[in-house]
Length: 450
Image 1 (cartoon, rainbow, N blue to C red):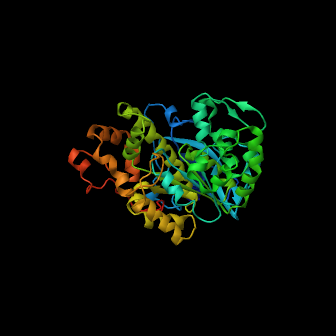
Image 2 (image 1 turned 135 degrees about the vertical axis):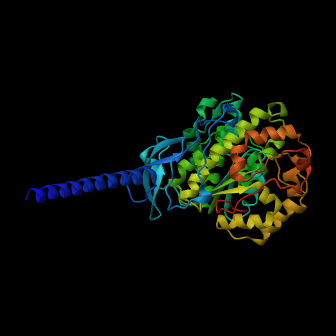
Image 3 (image 1 turned 30 degrees about the vertical axis):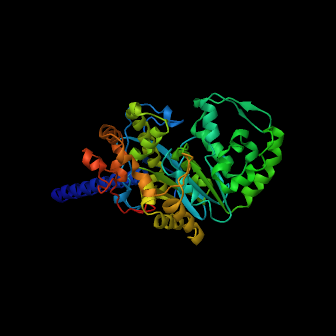
C-alpha cells in the first residue's frame, strides 16, 4: 500500500509539472505571436518595425553628417504569412486597426493626430510621385499628366521651401502672413500642407504656392488656373477671385497627380489610412547620376561630395523604409520605380507604370513618350524634360566623373546599393565602359519594372 501510494504521488506530481510547463509554454508563444507578428483582427496590437535613427524633419541640407544606422525589411525573402523578426535597431510603436473599404489594417501611429483625421477624407484617385532633385521625376510625372480628367500639380512645396530658406514671409488669403524657419517645417506641418492640396482646400494655402510660375511651365491643367493671374497685380483680392474656379476644377477631376522632390515618404505614409485610393510611385535614380547633375547645376560641388552624398543617400534610405512598410501592407498602392529602367525602355516601362496606376496605355500618350525620350528636341530649361536620347542622358555622368568621386559616393551609399542593386566601380576602365551594367535588380513585385 505504501509503495502504491508513493507511485501515485509521483505520477500526479509529474502530471502537474507537465501541465504547468505546458501552460507556461502556451503563454510564452501567445506573447511572441502578439508582439512580433502583425494582426488584422485586433483592436490594438504591438509591432516592432524597422525605422531610421536620428530622423530629420526638414530639407536634405539639414541632415546631420553623422553616420546613420539603417536596417531594411527583407521583403524579397519574406511573405505576409511569416513573422517579422525584430531588428537590433528598431522603434516600438503601437498600432491601431483602422477600417476602410471593408478591410481591417494595422497602422502605426507615428505622431499625434486628431480623431477627426481617422475618417476617410476622399476616395478620389490620387497619385503621388516622391523623388529627388535631378532624378527623372519631371519626366515621370509628365507622362502621367496627359490622361483625361487629370489634375497635375508640379512641386507644390517649391515656394514653401524657397521662401523659408531665404527668410521671406508666407502670405495668406485671409490677409495674414508668417515667416517660417526650418524648425517650422516638421512632418506634421508638411502633412497638413499636403492634405490641403489633395483636398482642394486652396483657400488655406499661401498665395506664393498658388501663383508659382511652375504651374504655367510644367502643368497643363494648372496652366488654365494660372491664366487667371497673368497680366494682373498679385494682390490678395485678385487671387481670391481666381481661387473658386481652381477649386471647382480640382473637385471635378477623376485623378489628382502630384510630384515632389521635397516630401519625405514617412509623411505620405502617415496619410494612407484616410485616402484609400492613394498610390505612390517612389522614383529612385542612381545616386551618382543624381548628384552629378546637381553639381552641374551648382546645387552642391565636388568638394562637398562626401557630406552631400551622405545626406542624399540617408534620405533615400529613410524613404525606402516607409516605402517597404507601405508595400508590405498595400502592395498595389506603393511601388518603386528605378529611373534607369524608364530611360532604357521608356515605352514598355511606361505601360507597366500605367498598369500599376490602373490607367490605359493610350496611343497618344505613348506617342508623346516616344517624342520626349527618343526624338524630342533638347530643352533649354535645365529643369525641363525634352531629351534626344533618354538612355544617354541617364548615363552621361559615367563619361565625366572622376573615379575617386564615384567611389566616395559608392562608400556612402552602400546601404541603398545593396538593397536596390546598384554596382560599385573599382577601376576607371569599368566606369567608362558603358557595356558594364550599373544595376543588377532582382525581380520582386515591389518594383514597377525590372
